[in-house]
Image 1 (cartoon, one colour):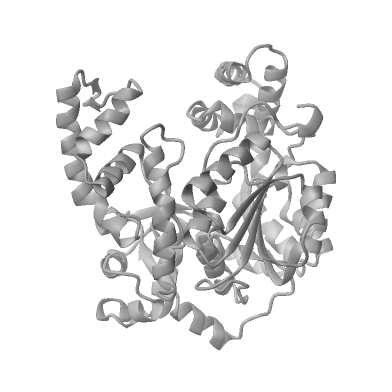
Image 2 (cartoon, helix red, strand yellow):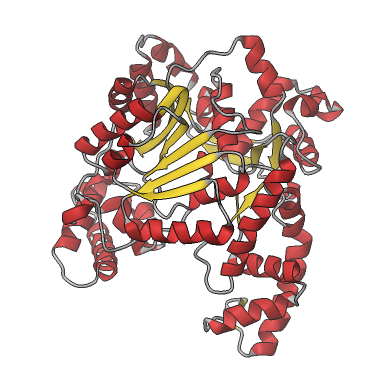
Amino acid sequence: MQGWTEGYVGGIGYIHAFYRELSPALLSFALTLRGWRSPMDLAGSFACAEIGCGHGVSSAVLAGCHPDARFEAVDFNPGHIAGAQRLAAEAGLGNAAFREESFAEYAQGGSKDLDIVTLHGVWSWVSAENRAILVDLLKRRLKPGGLVFVSYNALPGTLAYMPLRRVLVEHCADRTGPLPERIEEAVAFASRLTALNAGWFAQADALPARLDSLKRKSPNYIAHEYLNRDWTAFYHADVARELAAAKLDFAGPAVPMEQMDELSLPPDAMPLLAEARDPAYRETLRDLLTNRAFRRDLFVKGAERLTVAERRERLRATCFALLVPPDDLPEVVLAPVGRVPLPQDLHGPLAEALSAGTPTLAELSALPALARHGEEAVLRALMILTSLALAAPALPETGQAARALQADRFNAAILERSRRDDILDTLASPVLGSGVAVSRLEALFLLARRNGTDPAATAWEALSADGLALSRDGERLDGEEANLVELRARFDRFTRLRLPTLRRLGVA
Protein backbone atom coordinates (compact mmCIF):
# COMPACT_ATOMS: atom_id res chain seq x y z
CA MET A 1 0.00 0.00 0.00
CA GLN A 2 3.00 2.29 -0.46
CA GLY A 3 4.72 4.09 -3.34
CA TRP A 4 2.86 4.67 -6.57
CA THR A 5 -0.40 3.17 -5.29
CA GLU A 6 -0.97 6.21 -2.99
CA GLY A 7 -2.74 4.05 -0.41
CA TYR A 8 -4.84 2.15 -2.94
CA VAL A 9 -4.37 -1.58 -2.52
CA GLY A 10 -1.67 -2.96 -4.81
CA GLY A 11 -0.18 -6.34 -5.61
CA ILE A 12 -3.54 -7.89 -6.44
CA GLY A 13 -5.71 -7.07 -9.44
CA TYR A 14 -9.40 -6.22 -9.28
CA ILE A 15 -12.08 -8.56 -10.61
CA HIS A 16 -12.94 -8.58 -14.32
CA ALA A 17 -16.50 -7.27 -14.41
CA PHE A 18 -18.94 -5.50 -16.71
CA TYR A 19 -21.22 -2.91 -15.11
CA ARG A 20 -24.48 -2.50 -17.03
CA GLU A 21 -25.24 0.73 -15.13
CA LEU A 22 -22.66 2.44 -17.37
CA SER A 23 -24.44 1.60 -20.63
CA PRO A 24 -25.40 4.78 -22.55
CA ALA A 25 -28.96 3.62 -23.29
CA LEU A 26 -29.69 2.97 -19.61
CA LEU A 27 -28.11 6.28 -18.56
CA SER A 28 -30.12 8.13 -21.21
CA PHE A 29 -33.35 6.44 -20.09
CA ALA A 30 -32.76 7.41 -16.46
CA LEU A 31 -32.05 11.01 -17.46
CA THR A 32 -35.14 11.25 -19.64
CA LEU A 33 -37.33 9.87 -16.87
CA ARG A 34 -36.19 12.76 -14.69
CA GLY A 35 -36.86 15.29 -17.44
CA TRP A 36 -33.28 16.04 -18.50
CA ARG A 37 -31.97 16.24 -22.06
CA SER A 38 -29.42 13.48 -22.68
CA PRO A 39 -26.02 14.49 -24.13
CA MET A 40 -25.84 11.23 -26.11
CA ASP A 41 -26.90 10.47 -29.64
CA LEU A 42 -27.38 6.76 -29.10
CA ALA A 43 -27.40 6.06 -32.84
CA GLY A 44 -24.37 8.25 -33.53
CA SER A 45 -21.22 9.65 -32.00
CA PHE A 46 -20.43 10.66 -28.43
CA ALA A 47 -17.36 10.59 -26.21
CA CYS A 48 -17.26 8.67 -22.94
CA ALA A 49 -14.51 8.38 -20.31
CA GLU A 50 -14.41 5.74 -17.59
CA ILE A 51 -12.14 6.95 -14.79
CA GLY A 52 -10.73 4.22 -12.58
CA CYS A 53 -11.68 1.56 -15.11
CA GLY A 54 -9.95 -1.43 -13.50
CA HIS A 55 -9.48 -4.02 -16.23
CA GLY A 56 -11.52 -1.89 -18.61
CA VAL A 57 -14.13 -4.56 -19.30
CA SER A 58 -17.08 -2.13 -19.28
CA SER A 59 -15.44 0.30 -21.70
CA ALA A 60 -14.31 -2.54 -23.97
CA VAL A 61 -17.81 -4.05 -24.18
CA LEU A 62 -19.43 -0.66 -24.75
CA ALA A 63 -16.88 0.20 -27.45
CA GLY A 64 -17.77 -3.11 -29.08
CA CYS A 65 -21.42 -1.98 -29.20
CA HIS A 66 -20.90 1.62 -30.35
CA PRO A 67 -18.51 1.87 -33.32
CA ASP A 68 -19.23 5.56 -33.90
CA ALA A 69 -18.58 6.57 -30.28
CA ARG A 70 -15.21 7.20 -28.63
CA PHE A 71 -14.26 5.58 -25.35
CA GLU A 72 -11.38 6.44 -23.05
CA ALA A 73 -10.66 4.26 -20.04
CA VAL A 74 -8.14 5.32 -17.42
CA ASP A 75 -6.52 3.43 -14.56
CA PHE A 76 -3.21 3.92 -12.82
CA ASN A 77 -2.59 0.16 -12.39
CA PRO A 78 -0.36 -0.93 -15.32
CA GLY A 79 -1.43 -4.55 -14.93
CA HIS A 80 -5.06 -3.59 -15.50
CA ILE A 81 -4.30 -1.46 -18.54
CA ALA A 82 -1.93 -3.96 -20.17
CA GLY A 83 -4.68 -6.56 -20.23
CA ALA A 84 -7.26 -4.05 -21.49
CA GLN A 85 -4.98 -2.95 -24.33
CA ARG A 86 -4.40 -6.57 -25.33
CA LEU A 87 -8.16 -7.22 -25.42
CA ALA A 88 -8.70 -4.08 -27.53
CA ALA A 89 -6.08 -5.28 -30.02
CA GLU A 90 -7.56 -8.78 -30.23
CA ALA A 91 -11.09 -7.42 -30.68
CA GLY A 92 -10.14 -4.69 -33.17
CA LEU A 93 -11.47 -1.84 -31.02
CA GLY A 94 -10.20 1.19 -32.86
CA ASN A 95 -12.60 3.45 -30.96
CA ALA A 96 -11.29 2.68 -27.47
CA ALA A 97 -8.14 3.96 -25.76
CA PHE A 98 -6.92 2.42 -22.50
CA ARG A 99 -4.56 4.73 -20.67
CA GLU A 100 -2.27 4.07 -17.70
CA GLU A 101 -2.47 7.46 -16.03
CA SER A 102 -3.23 9.03 -12.69
CA PHE A 103 -6.25 11.28 -12.33
CA ALA A 104 -3.98 14.33 -12.38
CA GLU A 105 -2.19 13.21 -15.54
CA TYR A 106 -5.45 12.52 -17.33
CA ALA A 107 -6.97 15.83 -16.27
CA GLN A 108 -4.21 17.76 -18.03
CA GLY A 109 -4.84 16.25 -21.46
CA GLY A 110 -7.50 17.16 -23.99
CA SER A 111 -10.13 19.87 -23.83
CA LYS A 112 -13.83 19.97 -23.03
CA ASP A 113 -14.53 17.01 -25.27
CA LEU A 114 -16.37 14.45 -23.11
CA ASP A 115 -20.12 13.87 -23.16
CA ILE A 116 -20.10 11.28 -20.36
CA VAL A 117 -17.75 10.56 -17.48
CA THR A 118 -18.32 7.48 -15.32
CA LEU A 119 -16.84 7.05 -11.84
CA HIS A 120 -17.87 3.59 -10.68
CA GLY A 121 -16.16 2.26 -7.58
CA VAL A 122 -13.89 5.31 -7.29
CA TRP A 123 -15.32 8.12 -5.16
CA SER A 124 -15.41 6.21 -1.85
CA TRP A 125 -12.05 4.54 -2.36
CA VAL A 126 -9.68 7.45 -2.99
CA SER A 127 -8.30 10.26 -0.85
CA ALA A 128 -9.79 13.73 -0.46
CA GLU A 129 -6.87 15.04 -2.52
CA ASN A 130 -7.73 12.70 -5.37
CA ARG A 131 -11.41 13.61 -5.16
CA ALA A 132 -10.38 17.26 -5.59
CA ILE A 133 -8.41 16.23 -8.70
CA LEU A 134 -11.49 14.43 -10.02
CA VAL A 135 -13.56 17.58 -9.55
CA ASP A 136 -10.91 19.52 -11.47
CA LEU A 137 -10.94 16.85 -14.18
CA LEU A 138 -14.70 17.17 -14.58
CA LYS A 139 -14.36 20.93 -14.74
CA ARG A 140 -11.69 20.70 -17.45
CA ARG A 141 -12.94 17.83 -19.63
CA LEU A 142 -16.75 17.56 -19.43
CA LYS A 143 -18.72 19.44 -22.07
CA PRO A 144 -21.56 21.77 -21.14
CA GLY A 145 -24.63 19.57 -21.01
CA GLY A 146 -22.46 16.57 -20.12
CA LEU A 147 -23.33 13.72 -17.76
CA VAL A 148 -21.46 12.21 -14.81
CA PHE A 149 -22.25 8.84 -13.27
CA VAL A 150 -20.82 8.40 -9.77
CA SER A 151 -21.31 5.53 -7.32
CA TYR A 152 -20.26 5.49 -3.70
CA ASN A 153 -20.81 3.94 -0.28
CA ALA A 154 -23.69 5.84 1.26
CA LEU A 155 -24.66 6.77 4.78
CA PRO A 156 -26.40 5.74 6.90
CA GLY A 157 -26.65 2.23 5.42
CA THR A 158 -22.89 1.66 5.35
CA LEU A 159 -22.56 2.39 9.09
CA ALA A 160 -23.56 -1.19 9.87
CA TYR A 161 -20.49 -2.59 8.09
CA MET A 162 -17.77 -0.12 9.03
CA PRO A 163 -16.57 -2.08 12.11
CA LEU A 164 -16.39 -5.21 9.94
CA ARG A 165 -14.18 -3.40 7.47
CA ARG A 166 -11.92 -2.29 10.32
CA VAL A 167 -11.53 -5.90 11.49
CA LEU A 168 -10.60 -7.01 7.96
CA VAL A 169 -8.06 -4.20 7.53
CA GLU A 170 -6.40 -4.67 10.92
CA HIS A 171 -6.34 -8.47 10.74
CA CYS A 172 -4.69 -8.43 7.31
CA ALA A 173 -2.12 -5.93 8.57
CA ASP A 174 -1.51 -8.09 11.66
CA ARG A 175 -0.47 -11.10 9.55
CA THR A 176 2.25 -11.88 7.03
CA GLY A 177 2.17 -13.94 3.89
CA PRO A 178 0.32 -13.73 0.59
CA LEU A 179 -2.55 -11.23 0.68
CA PRO A 180 -5.23 -13.71 -0.56
CA GLU A 181 -4.43 -16.01 2.37
CA ARG A 182 -4.55 -13.13 4.85
CA ILE A 183 -7.92 -12.04 3.47
CA GLU A 184 -9.33 -15.55 3.87
CA GLU A 185 -8.03 -15.66 7.45
CA ALA A 186 -9.52 -12.25 8.21
CA VAL A 187 -12.98 -13.25 6.97
CA ALA A 188 -12.83 -16.46 9.00
CA PHE A 189 -11.75 -14.52 12.09
CA ALA A 190 -14.62 -12.05 11.64
CA SER A 191 -17.01 -15.02 11.47
CA ARG A 192 -15.66 -16.32 14.79
CA LEU A 193 -16.15 -12.89 16.36
CA THR A 194 -19.71 -12.74 15.06
CA ALA A 195 -20.48 -16.13 16.56
CA LEU A 196 -19.75 -14.72 20.03
CA ASN A 197 -22.81 -12.46 19.63
CA ALA A 198 -21.28 -9.94 22.01
CA GLY A 199 -21.25 -6.14 22.04
CA TRP A 200 -21.58 -4.58 18.60
CA PHE A 201 -21.87 -8.02 16.99
CA ALA A 202 -25.05 -8.69 18.95
CA GLN A 203 -26.64 -5.58 17.43
CA ALA A 204 -25.50 -6.06 13.82
CA ASP A 205 -28.41 -8.14 12.56
CA ALA A 206 -27.31 -8.01 8.93
CA LEU A 207 -23.70 -9.03 9.63
CA PRO A 208 -24.05 -12.84 9.22
CA ALA A 209 -25.57 -12.39 5.77
CA ARG A 210 -22.80 -9.94 4.79
CA LEU A 211 -20.11 -12.39 5.95
CA ASP A 212 -21.75 -15.25 4.06
CA SER A 213 -21.65 -13.05 0.97
CA LEU A 214 -17.96 -12.24 1.53
CA LYS A 215 -17.10 -15.93 1.81
CA ARG A 216 -18.33 -16.32 -1.77
CA LYS A 217 -16.31 -13.35 -3.04
CA SER A 218 -12.81 -13.58 -4.46
CA PRO A 219 -9.84 -12.14 -2.52
CA ASN A 220 -9.44 -9.69 -5.42
CA TYR A 221 -12.88 -8.23 -4.76
CA ILE A 222 -12.43 -8.02 -0.99
CA ALA A 223 -8.99 -6.42 -1.29
CA HIS A 224 -10.18 -3.58 -3.51
CA GLU A 225 -13.55 -3.05 -1.81
CA TYR A 226 -12.42 -3.13 1.83
CA LEU A 227 -8.65 -2.76 2.25
CA ASN A 228 -7.77 0.58 0.70
CA ARG A 229 -6.21 3.11 3.04
CA ASP A 230 -8.74 5.73 1.93
CA TRP A 231 -12.25 4.39 2.36
CA THR A 232 -15.07 6.82 2.98
CA ALA A 233 -18.84 6.60 3.16
CA PHE A 234 -20.78 9.75 2.29
CA TYR A 235 -24.07 11.42 2.86
CA HIS A 236 -25.49 12.37 -0.53
CA ALA A 237 -25.45 16.05 0.37
CA ASP A 238 -21.66 15.96 0.86
CA VAL A 239 -21.09 14.40 -2.58
CA ALA A 240 -23.44 16.90 -4.22
CA ARG A 241 -21.64 19.84 -2.62
CA GLU A 242 -18.19 18.59 -3.66
CA LEU A 243 -19.32 18.09 -7.27
CA ALA A 244 -20.94 21.52 -7.34
CA ALA A 245 -17.40 22.92 -7.66
CA ALA A 246 -17.37 21.41 -11.17
CA LYS A 247 -20.70 23.13 -11.95
CA LEU A 248 -22.56 19.85 -11.62
CA ASP A 249 -26.18 19.49 -10.50
CA PHE A 250 -27.82 16.33 -9.21
CA ALA A 251 -30.05 14.88 -11.92
CA GLY A 252 -31.41 11.80 -10.16
CA PRO A 253 -30.71 8.17 -9.34
CA ALA A 254 -29.22 6.13 -12.18
CA VAL A 255 -31.47 3.17 -11.30
CA PRO A 256 -35.01 3.84 -12.62
CA MET A 257 -36.67 1.91 -9.82
CA GLU A 258 -35.05 4.23 -7.27
CA GLN A 259 -36.95 7.10 -8.88
CA MET A 260 -40.24 5.50 -7.79
CA ASP A 261 -40.94 6.86 -4.31
CA GLU A 262 -43.87 4.51 -3.73
CA LEU A 263 -41.43 1.55 -3.83
CA SER A 264 -38.98 3.17 -1.42
CA LEU A 265 -40.92 5.21 1.12
CA PRO A 266 -44.07 4.93 3.22
CA PRO A 267 -46.82 7.29 2.02
CA ASP A 268 -46.68 9.49 5.12
CA ALA A 269 -42.98 10.22 4.47
CA MET A 270 -43.65 12.32 1.40
CA PRO A 271 -45.02 15.42 3.20
CA LEU A 272 -41.96 15.40 5.46
CA LEU A 273 -39.61 15.24 2.48
CA ALA A 274 -41.46 18.12 0.87
CA GLU A 275 -40.51 20.31 3.82
CA ALA A 276 -36.81 20.11 2.79
CA ARG A 277 -36.09 22.99 0.40
CA ASP A 278 -32.55 21.98 -0.55
CA PRO A 279 -32.59 19.05 -3.05
CA ALA A 280 -29.38 17.59 -1.54
CA TYR A 281 -30.93 17.64 1.93
CA ARG A 282 -34.11 16.05 0.58
CA GLU A 283 -32.14 13.24 -1.06
CA THR A 284 -30.18 12.66 2.15
CA LEU A 285 -33.47 12.32 4.03
CA ARG A 286 -34.51 9.66 1.51
CA ASP A 287 -31.35 7.71 2.34
CA LEU A 288 -32.09 7.99 6.06
CA LEU A 289 -35.60 6.65 5.53
CA THR A 290 -34.43 3.74 3.35
CA ASN A 291 -31.12 3.09 5.16
CA ARG A 292 -29.41 3.06 1.77
CA ALA A 293 -25.83 1.72 1.77
CA PHE A 294 -24.82 2.37 -1.84
CA ARG A 295 -25.79 5.07 -4.32
CA ARG A 296 -25.57 5.34 -8.10
CA ASP A 297 -26.13 9.00 -8.96
CA LEU A 298 -26.34 11.08 -12.11
CA PHE A 299 -25.06 14.66 -12.24
CA VAL A 300 -25.35 17.05 -15.17
CA LYS A 301 -23.32 20.09 -16.18
CA GLY A 302 -25.75 22.73 -17.30
CA ALA A 303 -28.00 20.23 -19.03
CA GLU A 304 -31.32 21.45 -20.39
CA ARG A 305 -34.66 20.55 -18.96
CA LEU A 306 -37.15 18.85 -21.26
CA THR A 307 -40.66 20.18 -21.52
CA VAL A 308 -43.43 17.82 -20.46
CA ALA A 309 -44.23 17.19 -24.13
CA GLU A 310 -40.58 16.53 -25.04
CA ARG A 311 -40.14 14.10 -22.16
CA ARG A 312 -43.25 12.15 -23.15
CA GLU A 313 -42.21 12.10 -26.81
CA ARG A 314 -38.74 10.79 -26.01
CA LEU A 315 -40.02 8.14 -23.63
CA ARG A 316 -42.63 6.96 -26.14
CA ALA A 317 -39.89 6.61 -28.77
CA THR A 318 -37.63 4.54 -26.48
CA CYS A 319 -37.23 0.90 -27.53
CA PHE A 320 -37.06 -1.96 -25.03
CA ALA A 321 -35.81 -5.55 -25.09
CA LEU A 322 -36.41 -8.52 -22.82
CA LEU A 323 -33.25 -10.03 -21.31
CA VAL A 324 -34.74 -13.32 -20.13
CA PRO A 325 -37.32 -15.81 -21.44
CA PRO A 326 -40.86 -14.52 -20.81
CA ASP A 327 -41.59 -17.33 -18.35
CA ASP A 328 -38.65 -16.26 -16.17
CA LEU A 329 -40.24 -13.02 -15.00
CA PRO A 330 -40.94 -13.20 -11.25
CA GLU A 331 -44.38 -12.68 -9.77
CA VAL A 332 -43.00 -10.66 -6.82
CA VAL A 333 -39.95 -8.40 -6.45
CA LEU A 334 -38.26 -7.00 -3.36
CA ALA A 335 -38.19 -3.24 -2.79
CA PRO A 336 -37.38 -1.08 0.25
CA VAL A 337 -41.07 -1.05 1.15
CA GLY A 338 -41.20 -4.86 1.03
CA ARG A 339 -42.51 -7.44 -1.43
CA VAL A 340 -44.11 -5.86 -4.49
CA PRO A 341 -46.29 -8.06 -6.75
CA LEU A 342 -45.96 -7.77 -10.51
CA PRO A 343 -49.54 -7.98 -11.86
CA GLN A 344 -49.57 -10.84 -14.33
CA ASP A 345 -52.30 -9.30 -16.48
CA LEU A 346 -49.83 -6.48 -17.19
CA HIS A 347 -46.41 -8.15 -17.04
CA GLY A 348 -47.47 -11.28 -18.93
CA PRO A 349 -48.54 -9.48 -22.13
CA LEU A 350 -45.62 -7.06 -21.73
CA ALA A 351 -43.09 -9.90 -21.61
CA GLU A 352 -44.72 -11.59 -24.60
CA ALA A 353 -44.54 -8.39 -26.65
CA LEU A 354 -40.92 -7.73 -25.68
CA SER A 355 -39.90 -11.27 -26.59
CA ALA A 356 -40.96 -10.62 -30.18
CA GLY A 357 -38.57 -7.72 -30.83
CA THR A 358 -37.68 -4.27 -29.51
CA PRO A 359 -40.95 -2.32 -29.50
CA THR A 360 -41.17 1.28 -28.37
CA LEU A 361 -43.16 2.38 -25.37
CA ALA A 362 -45.72 3.85 -27.76
CA GLU A 363 -46.07 0.54 -29.62
CA LEU A 364 -46.37 -1.43 -26.39
CA SER A 365 -48.98 0.93 -24.95
CA ALA A 366 -51.10 0.58 -28.09
CA LEU A 367 -51.40 -3.21 -27.80
CA PRO A 368 -54.95 -4.18 -26.73
CA ALA A 369 -53.74 -6.26 -23.76
CA LEU A 370 -51.68 -3.32 -22.45
CA ALA A 371 -53.72 -0.32 -23.59
CA ARG A 372 -56.34 -0.90 -20.90
CA HIS A 373 -53.65 -0.41 -18.21
CA GLY A 374 -52.56 2.94 -19.63
CA GLU A 375 -49.20 4.17 -20.86
CA GLU A 376 -48.01 5.30 -17.42
CA ALA A 377 -48.53 1.82 -15.95
CA VAL A 378 -46.62 0.23 -18.83
CA LEU A 379 -43.78 2.72 -18.34
CA ARG A 380 -43.58 2.00 -14.62
CA ALA A 381 -43.51 -1.73 -15.30
CA LEU A 382 -40.58 -1.15 -17.67
CA MET A 383 -38.81 0.94 -15.03
CA ILE A 384 -38.99 -2.00 -12.63
CA LEU A 385 -37.90 -4.58 -15.21
CA THR A 386 -34.95 -2.51 -16.41
CA SER A 387 -33.79 -1.92 -12.83
CA LEU A 388 -33.80 -5.66 -12.15
CA ALA A 389 -31.89 -6.51 -15.37
CA LEU A 390 -34.94 -8.38 -16.70
CA ALA A 391 -35.35 -5.87 -19.54
CA ALA A 392 -33.34 -2.99 -20.92
CA PRO A 393 -33.68 0.05 -23.13
CA ALA A 394 -32.64 -0.85 -26.68
CA LEU A 395 -30.92 1.24 -29.34
CA PRO A 396 -32.68 2.67 -32.40
CA GLU A 397 -32.52 0.58 -35.58
CA THR A 398 -30.45 3.32 -37.24
CA GLY A 399 -26.83 2.17 -37.36
CA GLN A 400 -27.54 -1.38 -36.24
CA ALA A 401 -25.71 -2.99 -39.18
CA ALA A 402 -22.46 -1.21 -38.29
CA ARG A 403 -22.96 -2.03 -34.63
CA ALA A 404 -23.52 -5.68 -35.45
CA LEU A 405 -20.26 -5.90 -37.43
CA GLN A 406 -18.18 -4.43 -34.62
CA ALA A 407 -19.95 -6.43 -31.92
CA ASP A 408 -19.37 -9.62 -33.88
CA ARG A 409 -15.60 -8.96 -34.03
CA PHE A 410 -15.53 -8.24 -30.32
CA ASN A 411 -17.57 -11.31 -29.46
CA ALA A 412 -15.38 -13.54 -31.62
CA ALA A 413 -12.40 -12.53 -29.48
CA ILE A 414 -14.27 -13.17 -26.23
CA LEU A 415 -15.54 -16.57 -27.39
CA GLU A 416 -12.07 -17.63 -28.50
CA ARG A 417 -10.78 -16.76 -25.03
CA SER A 418 -13.34 -19.12 -23.49
CA ARG A 419 -11.15 -22.02 -24.66
CA ARG A 420 -8.58 -20.94 -22.04
CA ASP A 421 -10.53 -19.48 -19.12
CA ASP A 422 -13.76 -17.88 -17.90
CA ILE A 423 -12.31 -14.52 -16.87
CA LEU A 424 -14.34 -12.55 -19.42
CA ASP A 425 -18.03 -13.46 -19.40
CA THR A 426 -19.75 -10.60 -21.24
CA LEU A 427 -20.63 -10.28 -24.94
CA ALA A 428 -21.49 -7.07 -26.78
CA SER A 429 -25.10 -6.64 -27.87
CA PRO A 430 -25.65 -4.35 -30.87
CA VAL A 431 -29.34 -4.34 -29.96
CA LEU A 432 -28.87 -3.04 -26.41
CA GLY A 433 -25.62 -1.15 -26.82
CA SER A 434 -24.64 -2.98 -23.65
CA GLY A 435 -23.28 -6.29 -22.43
CA VAL A 436 -24.89 -9.71 -22.05
CA ALA A 437 -23.45 -12.14 -19.53
CA VAL A 438 -22.73 -15.71 -20.61
CA SER A 439 -21.27 -18.61 -18.68
CA ARG A 440 -18.13 -20.32 -19.93
CA LEU A 441 -20.17 -23.29 -21.06
CA GLU A 442 -22.54 -21.05 -23.01
CA ALA A 443 -19.55 -19.29 -24.57
CA LEU A 444 -18.06 -22.62 -25.65
CA PHE A 445 -21.39 -23.67 -27.18
CA LEU A 446 -21.56 -20.37 -29.09
CA LEU A 447 -17.95 -20.81 -30.22
CA ALA A 448 -18.77 -24.25 -31.58
CA ARG A 449 -21.81 -22.94 -33.45
CA ARG A 450 -19.69 -20.15 -34.92
CA ASN A 451 -16.97 -22.57 -36.05
CA GLY A 452 -19.28 -25.37 -37.16
CA THR A 453 -17.84 -27.88 -34.68
CA ASP A 454 -19.51 -30.32 -32.32
CA PRO A 455 -20.62 -28.31 -29.26
CA ALA A 456 -20.15 -31.11 -26.72
CA ALA A 457 -16.72 -32.04 -28.05
CA THR A 458 -15.61 -28.39 -28.19
CA ALA A 459 -16.69 -27.79 -24.62
CA TRP A 460 -15.13 -31.00 -23.32
CA GLU A 461 -11.81 -30.26 -25.00
CA ALA A 462 -11.58 -26.92 -23.19
CA LEU A 463 -12.86 -28.13 -19.83
CA SER A 464 -10.78 -31.29 -19.68
CA ALA A 465 -7.64 -29.33 -20.60
CA ASP A 466 -8.18 -27.40 -17.35
CA GLY A 467 -8.78 -30.57 -15.35
CA LEU A 468 -12.48 -29.79 -15.03
CA ALA A 469 -15.48 -32.08 -15.26
CA LEU A 470 -19.24 -31.65 -14.96
CA SER A 471 -21.48 -32.73 -12.10
CA ARG A 472 -24.96 -34.19 -12.11
CA ASP A 473 -27.10 -34.32 -8.97
CA GLY A 474 -24.11 -33.19 -6.95
CA GLU A 475 -21.87 -36.00 -8.17
CA ARG A 476 -18.78 -35.38 -10.31
CA LEU A 477 -18.91 -37.19 -13.64
CA ASP A 478 -15.91 -39.37 -14.38
CA GLY A 479 -14.61 -40.07 -17.86
CA GLU A 480 -15.02 -38.52 -21.27
CA GLU A 481 -18.16 -40.36 -22.33
CA ALA A 482 -20.16 -39.46 -19.23
CA ASN A 483 -19.21 -35.81 -19.60
CA LEU A 484 -20.05 -35.78 -23.31
CA VAL A 485 -23.50 -37.22 -22.60
CA GLU A 486 -24.13 -34.49 -20.03
CA LEU A 487 -22.77 -31.81 -22.34
CA ARG A 488 -25.12 -32.88 -25.14
CA ALA A 489 -28.07 -32.67 -22.74
CA ARG A 490 -26.98 -29.21 -21.59
CA PHE A 491 -26.51 -28.03 -25.16
CA ASP A 492 -30.04 -29.17 -25.93
CA ARG A 493 -31.38 -27.13 -23.00
CA PHE A 494 -29.22 -24.18 -24.05
CA THR A 495 -30.63 -24.35 -27.58
CA ARG A 496 -34.22 -24.46 -26.36
CA LEU A 497 -34.12 -22.06 -23.42
CA ARG A 498 -31.23 -19.63 -23.75
CA LEU A 499 -30.31 -19.35 -27.42
CA PRO A 500 -33.54 -17.59 -28.49
CA THR A 501 -32.80 -14.73 -26.07
CA LEU A 502 -29.17 -14.46 -27.20
CA ARG A 503 -30.30 -14.31 -30.83
CA ARG A 504 -32.85 -11.63 -30.06
CA LEU A 505 -30.08 -9.57 -28.44
CA GLY A 506 -27.76 -10.03 -31.42
CA VAL A 507 -24.99 -11.98 -29.66
CA ALA A 508 -25.65 -15.37 -31.30
